[in-house]
Image (cartoon, rainbow over all chains, first blue to last red; front, side, top):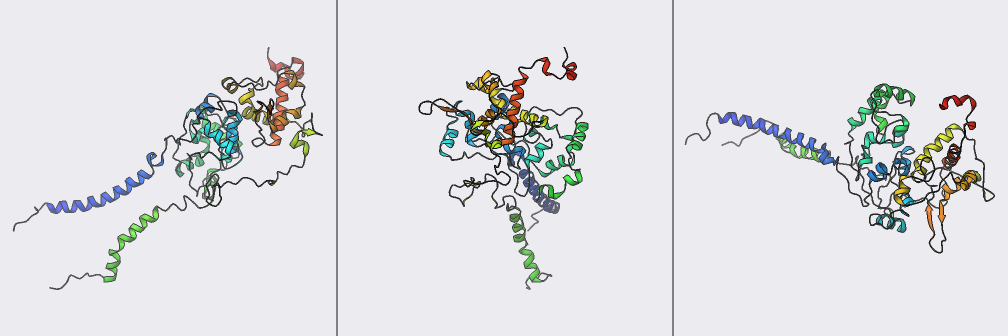
Length: 219
Length: 210
């Protein structure tokens, strides 16, 4: 019986060994890229809510301040979701009988909370405090994007650790004056770095060596 | 014919053959989310422990938070012997008025307008008529009136027929100190709309221009 494989099949056999290894490496890479992708993390994907609440209308058009509803954002680690009573402050008189408001009215009458869907999720091993950020000149739109233009809110930043650290290493590139923090239309001025350095000094921001300590976020 | 023998220790070979199981176990371990989703209750987390399924618990009636004991009646009610008082419970400073301005622009300007005439985008689009702070009745009223209104809201009409809560209480959102700051700022707004050049200190008149 003659040889089934020609002599150069030896090369193919060797190459396929390497190809197999490469395939494994590729699979690992593809998985890593997939789990870090905006697709997997649902970044820039609008999250439908049980109530068709539009930030675009309430904040963008009507000009209601962020803190009117998210009262605790500058007092607590958590930016609260408003109580139904806050909605009813206006909607007991405005559009009360609209079908869109019906779940809110029902919640107010029964005391059962509305089950909003979480949009921004930080892992439990991360300690994030809203109040220290907004009180030290980090604007809402720096992390959350132009919420004033979102009819349905989506997450705009993937919130990787490297993204957090970028600001903790170079706060002067992102800080705003305190009275511009809630301005959703804020555009950084041309002299941002100079202004940022001045704000870092004025607001007593920790130096980067301290701001990048593990315990700052993982406690 | 002799069976093929590994040159290696047979138990080591067995271990190596089982190696892929260990690798697989490593892969599985990497998918554990125990640290990502810790079993502690965080704000708004659901809970199976309580019958209503809520992790955040309402206060037990009568709870007094640390530092929130209300020992000064006037500061928390705005009333002196049941009548709205016409004094501030603490000194008015520039910082206080600025704080009042900040809070006014967040919570009040939404309906009453930034200058306090009761005209705003919400009022216009929603078809409601918020109070105008520059009407004579509110210019004459005691400063405690604003505090009482922010604390309790406004009820219009007859409860028996078609009465309704036209303004809700803001007590849960604005601290008593800030409510007084807003009251002081409303007074400042009222002054600002009826000021003459004589109200400006002589040394600052030059800065007015014209």
